[in-house]
Length: 127
Ligand SMILES: [Zn+2]
Image (cartoon, rainbow, N blue to C red; front, top):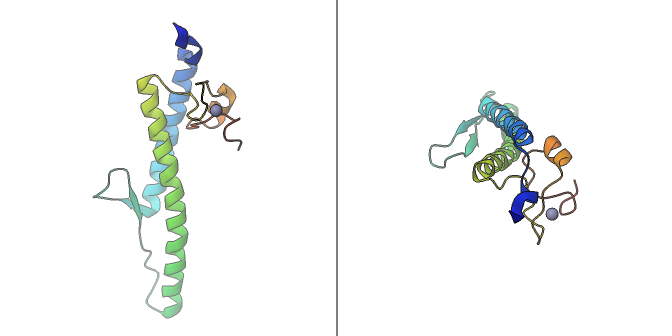
């Protein structure tokens, strides 16, 4: 079993998986607050255009609000995609392995606890 060093123990894995599921829940409800699920693309959201009023200044406000929402929506959506990807990896048994290291290595558990959807180790992408 050469790959034993690339496995997270079951207890820690269960804990991280729970954190990922909670994060997915949180991101989904945050997105649902101002965006609607796209019917065309699975897992994609679309920011709703706020209806503030009909006056030009109100219209301008709607546009700037929409731009803010789009930026936030994009960020939440990216985070959600990362969380989903990490959850898929837990199913495949490859969760926690750095995607960037030429020689596969496990991402530091402390990093995963703080940032469970991390794809790379701290050496590869210091944050
Ligand atoms: Zn790495």
